[in-house]
Length: 303
Length: 192
Image (cartoon, rainbow over all chains, first blue to last red; front, side):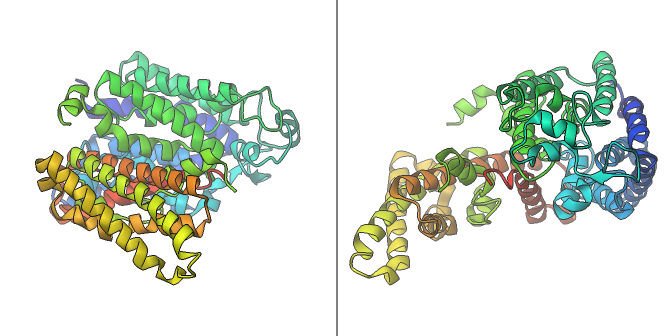
């Protein structure tokens, strides 16, 4: 059993290339958000630990608050108001973690609780990302959003006409997804995350998007490559859905969990109001974990 | 007119009785200590809901409306629901006395479960035909049973944790219900 602190350090280190790629495409706002989120997380975590009369040094030392902050910073648009980042961190650590008794007791992924709360409260602020022309020049809907609300146009039309698309997925996001996937593969290689959740999730997303893709007509949804390389797909697969506290412990449960999160991500992303579905898919998946972890024998005998 | 699959998805997830319309909160908080009890309560409520919608719809459309007595609909619906609950209670007491003891006061309280009456009023408001009304009520009942079971699973896990004293009991249950409702907000907009 590797200790939490070392794990969190490796997780943070493998997030770095993806964050660097984000900063490359979207400017220094990304790094500002990271700084804001991490300092807010340290301040909130320290004050809550003090209120709960627990050791501040030990509580902060496990590094989990910093990883939560990093995930929130990555999820936030670079130009968002700073206080929204702080609010998400506050909600994540207090409502998502400490009211349940701290790390290990929380049923929901804290970062996603914080992000979802801010997302449903301030949807317009969180839907605006810098466009393909560089920072400060163009801001607007993300590629996922553009594709969803494109009216009757074919995918090829919207791809050339609208900004925000790249070679296979959303501009910028495709490379960011690649770098998060690379970091995720390092985690897999070090056996810090179980392969079952990311593989099951990505396979489900691929199969569902392939079934709903007809080559790009006006009624088509995005291609598998588009879905794998847009939004927060890879971050979700390797870093968010795999949170050991809020995912199932049994191998069978983990595969079902991955399938569930992949399917929910696809449904929310393609058919619901919100631009991406990661936060909702993960929270809904988390809520099913106690049932997924139930041994079949127990549920049968309880009848 | 909504497509049938959309109508059903909407009833189960998007407009979930408990988490989106905030109906039926009493059993949602009251009978979700154990998963099996929650499931049984969900199934019992589902039975009343589906049958209640069918009978209420029939009586309203083919008896009250021709007699020009639509004003009496609420009294009639409550009467239908109460009779059904009595039938369900007798059946459960006969087949599983233990379950009858566990569900206790919540079983007769299905009568006053606003979700049951709510479903009847929703299908009349949306002017669904008979088949759609019954299917909608069944789907809404499935959604109710689903969140009852999921929430009970979460609450069973909470018992094992050392919740900080100020949040023990009702507060942590309500926080968890809030986060679950937050997660279900992700479905908003499906079918529009």
